[in-house]
Length: 265
Image (cartoon, rainbow, N blue to C red):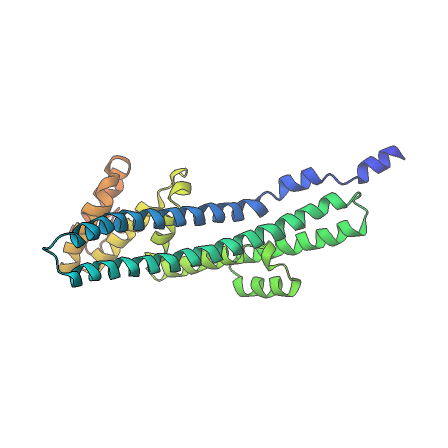
């Protein structure tokens, strides 16, 4: 009898180990939101404080007309209003992240209220978890709209990472169209995580931009490509020298070349 009770007892800690990603993403989003807040404040502080000192100094001088001082103050007020709007947007985003985190914590906390695997509450909890996993698989497979509809029907939108996968899908679609802007913006927002990866995504995107310029065979684009290479590719010379030298060789070969390795590029 004791052995049977032990075998059906629910170990909530083991379930939490399996469901760590459920809390990891909101934590990462909150961290990134805070970093954005700090970056915006620092950037505005670097502009406003010196400008304010300069305006105060100028107001004490007879050399600067009052209208010019007022114009400087108006410019600073406009910057501060812009900062306020950005901070309000970040605060709204932070509240959404905290709300999502609370929903996920509540979902996982239900495990501690379930004593046994045979309890009907565990069956209900497991069904929600299965729905989560199905939606996650659908999102990873590209069935975004179907996943969104299922999440709404099951009322578990806060327990799945819909927005993140929608963003990934949008970036993937833009790359298929030959556009790299969204992907580069994502790289900039996730620099810390990308540094831990051995794959240099930003370099690959910059290289693709260079290749697309060369592909046009337009002389003006050739000049743009060389400027682009000096600005964005040259800094990677120590680690990506082979690819950079190969990219330089593209200047001498047309898009329909049969010469390797330029043919595959």
